[in-house]
Image (cartoon, rainbow, N blue to C red; front, side, top):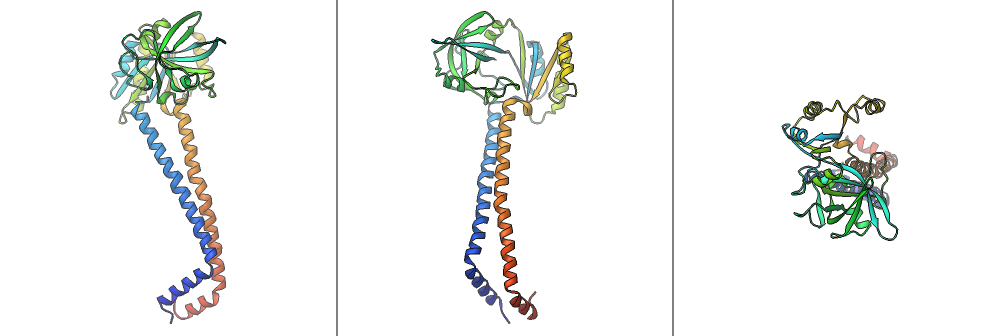
Length: 335
């Protein structure tokens, strides 16, 4: 009777006789595993790094857009348990680049605390410095916009609001998670630093520029992980109604666009709530990362499926070629 040692010798002889076939299967399997482990591991690292980046810079969980809201209401929002809120003015301006062409660029200016970084949607200074003690004529320029136009700390920019213009000195170059993709709006996703720029200005200066002293039109809200989001939304609705906001809507609200237009025509004040999952920058980054995850999973599967089919065909041919040996061994009592 053939012992285990004899079966092992037969195995090695079969492997030696079909070394190219077996080698090809081993290579395809190895490629499938390697292309899965490498890209999928990279995806996991990127996902963890991205969420850590958002957490480190205190990215908001909600953005509340209104026509105007009192700073008192912002303080009340911040008093909701588990919530940190910061109000600002967010406005469109025209940036006059000067030079021989007198080029004008559409811009967006966001208000920041004049002293100390914001508690929500923090920024990183990559060149120059934050606002100085004499901040009334200072701004910060977003990194991509500054790099494209070769702007440096100490340069001056002219900002136009209506028919009025004012010059501001660039104190620093900044970046942050909220503006990883400098996009004008959800309706204009394709923008470049050539035609659109983001600036940061001390909140009191920006409020005075738009006659909104004591008011804000954008509230950034960060919530603790354990806080129920629906409780926050319900509390926001009560605070807004007390401040004259009749209705708060969001992306998935059953109330249609037509109803919102009617509110505008009738003069009904409404607010729009954007969750982090719907925020433009966050959504685009997550879509890129999800596409990479799908590629990291699907592409290796191609190799593994081919390896499985090759193994099945190879085993089938091997069994067909050794039917006599298999029948003999079954007759000798092997399972």
